[in-house]
Structure formats: structure tokens, C-alpha cells
Length: 250
Length: 344
Image 1 (cartoon, helix red, strand yellow):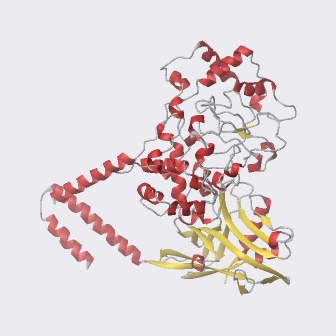
Image 2: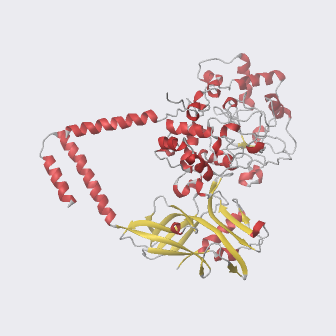
């Protein structure tokens, strides 16, 4: 329908002979063509969902529930993390790169745990790659909005830089005020760069579910000794190494 | 058809001319290096600069709405805090350092005495959240500004959005800060061959070039690097400077080289403001080095100055005073914004 209408318009315009008008026609024609192409390409795209499902071992993670690790009770009170740089691969070649790929996921806000991506419908892939955390270039390039806005509570101010992930909770083994543990992990400078790349096998799915099991991190840490990490350094680096293992395919 | 074409042309002219009246042209002084700040990511406009200026003087940025940026960065002292060796903030709490003078910030690739902040856009977050300075949270500042009478419309004018975000808040503060350019001292006019040094100033300039210029490099009068200048550590503050940021032992006691521009008015001197007078600073560099401190390689050669030479050097340093900067009305408290004239 749209194409015929457009052809009629251009045809009637072309009957006039003045050159200026021809230029005008040309501009209008290319605009119409451009929008047609836009519509056409939009029709060939589909929206896929990457869903991060938080677990504690075999159970779905609910904040503030009492959980058990080796018989010792603990609670997770907050869990927030940045997922960035999403790419899809086929035979080790990148077939899709998300633009402006910065997502803040917060277990207390279920909506934030689903990342919609729009890809060409035809694209075939066998792997997904993403980062846990914010790259160093973004860390040194000034202020950004959206999920990167420093008002999101994921930013250090005394020595500026993003907090890649926050995990907060309570455990009796923590000899701290209110038995709290706080892991605020970030740092973008060598040798304490804490951004981690995660690669998972993933076959052409429209809904990609990624299991996010926080027990895998808790198992690797001794909460009685390590319970306050809030600055870049060796401890943050250790936690980021363990943290990257919490992601797997359902 | 012709009419439509002409109309589009007129409309685009109007849009373009409107844009240029609001745009701010950042001028790099002759022979100065290229600024570090990336203006393409934060296009300067008069409305954003004006908003940033209001925020610079805005006490709502602090927990109890008493402290603004200007509390520790007063224009007449080259935007630093005089009279106190260590700057004081909210509830008269004493900080750990003397607030740095603010000028020519578009050329700085790091901020703070230890370079803890890597970008001008993020600088304001540090004093806002520091418990000894403003003791506030950026999220809460945004809420307070949003609830205020004047800011939603100022943000709307500047960013076409009355919803205030951290991004827009910080970008507008950066916009005001980069306009604080000091490049119009007597020294600058001599360099532009518009005036001459006195014999005393000329001799002082020579001494400066021999003894000071390696760290206080022209034209910014800082090499923007971190150096150990031989100050013995204050055992109460125990401030290790750059090492606090890098965790590298060789960075212990390194501090960022401050600019010497407007030094006549930016006393007291050094990161902890331990020297009140320039003569004390010169005494430190000529005879005050403590044994056991690893000095910057640039200070290995002993500096010897006669008493006449000291006077000459200070005479030269005074030529770095830029009154058109210190008294520039574009930088001062924006009375017209805070107390607009009532329409009669």
C-alpha cells in the first residue's frame, strides 16, 4: 500500500520540469525510501529476552529469607550487578553486538532481571558473551545517564569508579555490627581490574535463561574472615574471580 | 513546492541562529595545549553553564543545606579556602587537606591532591559525599533539587527535561568549572608581547625557569603529575597521598603538583596548607628537605637562592595574578538566579 502511494506522488512530481523541484522530489523520495527500508528492516527483527534467574543452590533466591550454607544460617539482603557488552557468537564469530549495552540488574526489582535485545530474526548463534561489570574506558570517560547514572547507588565517590556488583547480607559467623557482610566489588585499574567476561553456550533461543547461583560465591568465601570488601584491591579481585562462576545455563 | 522549500530554509535558519545564541565557544588561549576535557560529550551552552554556576553556589548540595562548593572554593582566592590550613566543611568539621584552587580544569587529566578522581564530571560527587565536607548523597541532592522551586525549570531550559538526573546535574557543574580559565595575568600579557616584566620580575622568571619550571610547567604552571617534594609527613594526618589511590609503595607521599597561577591569593600552601607565606615555601625548597624522604628526581639538584633572588622570584610569582579571573562577574554568586527581580 505504502509503496504504490509513494510511487504516485513521485510520478506526479516528476511531470514538472523545473530543476529545483526535481531536487525537492529527490529529497522526498529518498526520505520515503529510507522509511520504507526502516519498516522493512524492523519486520525482520525479533526481540529476544535474556533472563537472569537468581538461585541459592537448588532454591530460588528470595531476599531476606533464611538460607543455609553448611548448616549455618544466612540471609541475602541486597544483590545488584552490572551486565554489559552483550554479544552473540556463531562458530567463534560475533554475529550480534548490543549497542549501549549497560544493564543494572537488581534482585529486588524483578523487571530489571530481564534484558530485552532486538536482533535480526535470521541470526544464528551458539554462544553468548557478556561482562560482569563496567569496562575501564567507561570508568574514565565522565558521567553517563540511564543505568550508569551515579544516582543508582553503584558508584564510588571518594575514588571514583563503578561498583560492578553489590552483595549484602547477614550471617552469624560475621563478627561485625548486626552480623552483616558487605561485598561492594569494583576497580578498573591494573592489577585490580575486576570486570569479568562470561561465555555461555546458547542455541538460537528467543528466551535465554541464565541461572545465577549466589551459593557458588558464598561457598568460596569464608564469611568469618572476609565480610567487608568495599574498595578496589586484592580482596575485590578475589571475589570477582569467584563471582564469574555463578552464571550457568539452565 | 517552491514555497515549502523556502519555508524549510527559513525554519532551519531560525533553528541554527537560536542554537548559536545559546552555544558557548570555549577559547583555548594562544600556544596552550589542547584541553583534556572532551567537549563533544558535553556540549557547552550558556544555559547549562548558568545552571552549573547556580549549583556551584547551592547549599542544597549538603546534608543540612549549609555548605556549597563555594564554601571551600571562594572566587577571590582563586577558588580555594584561605585562613585555614585544612579546609572545614559541614558542622565545622575539619577535613584532611587544603582545598585545591580551581582554574584551567579543562586541561587536568585527574583531580584532587592524590588524583583519586579521574574525570571532572565525577569530581563533585567526592565532596558531596565526604562526611567532613557536605555529607550528603547524590540521590538525595537530586530529590531536593527536584522539589525546589527554581531548579526543575533551570534543568528544563538547559537540558529540555525538567526531570533532574545525576548525569545532568554533574554535566552542568562540569560546564561551569571548565569556564574557569585563568590566562590573563601580567605574565600572559608579557608572553603575548603586550607588556614587559620589570628587571626584578625578569630575573625572577629566569630563576623560576631554572629551579621550578620542571614541575610547574608553563603555561599551566603544573606538569599535572604527582611528585615527592620532600615535605616531612604530618604524623597526625598520616596522609600518604598518591599511594592511597594506587597502593604502590613508590607513590607514597606523592602529591599532585599545584598550579602557581594566582598563587598570591591562594594561600596557605601545600596539600595540608602548612605554609602561610610564599617565603616559607621557598625556605622549604632551599633548605627544608628532610633526610630519609625519597625526593622527586627533579629536586635532586640543590636549589640555592640569595635573599635578593628570593625577592625576585616572588616578584615573578606575583605576575601570575589574574585579576580578570579573580573578579570575573561571570564566575561570581549568581544573584540574578537566586534572587530574581520581581516583575512590577
